[in-house]
Length: 329
Image 1 (cartoon, rainbow, N blue to C red):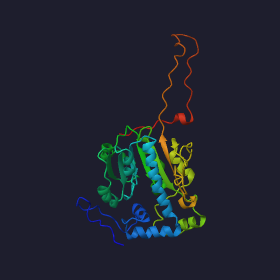
Image 2: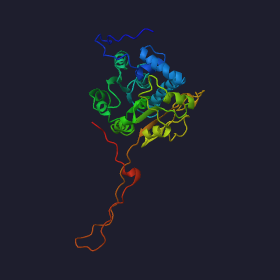
Image 3: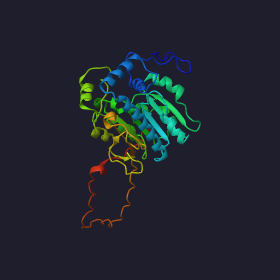
Image 4: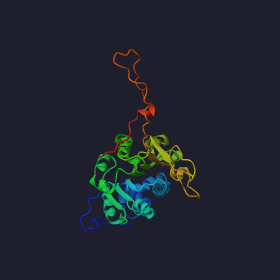
């Protein structure tokens, strides 16, 4: 197989240095989708995982379908026109900006990835409509503050208006030591009410036991750096959000993440859960409730009045103790 050209970017400048000896998730994903922008190490890793779970290609394709349905939902039904897509991967057909701007050309998108080859291709292929904007950040999900304070983000998106935070098939590359819930929470805290979290996450929940034993018990390239989580752990990413959409259009929303292959899928045959085993959903950040008008209450006691003093307000518990999410400049 001919290796991709990495010597120059589309503008003729030297491309960022790329370590082709180590597999990268974005390039391995490209390999599974039948792309050409991958190297021997990516293909070796991809084949090793395929040997242990042949349905990985089905799961990868379902992830793409979930992303596209979620973007359409965000624009058409949730009214969102801005997207922060982290873990972009190599451009393929029907990327986030293409799906969104086909519905409303004024949509704005910021892509984030940490692979130099993705950066090279992004400069050439991630082009926006004249009415909208499309930008790219070379950054890592593990450093959400760097993403949030980047000038390009603020030049492209208006963070006083709702944003769809796209974390599709990327959070499972965060270990517990990376504090994945803090990372996602930091990003969400910077977005206003009405913003969306679009997240999918691989799991071993539904994969046949024999395949799981091979995936977890054998050594192979690509095993390290992958952290599947169970349904409850994936659901925790959506804590405090309202889950939107469902497996069936026009039905009540599921209160929990669902299989990505079932989320608002068009009528037709879906792959088995064991072939997908990826949980996902779309959660919306709640609008803080308006403060209740205070009743005037009894008149204040005069100096020296011997009546009972006013009681302090009742102590808040549970969800009422939570502080509202704040906007990070």
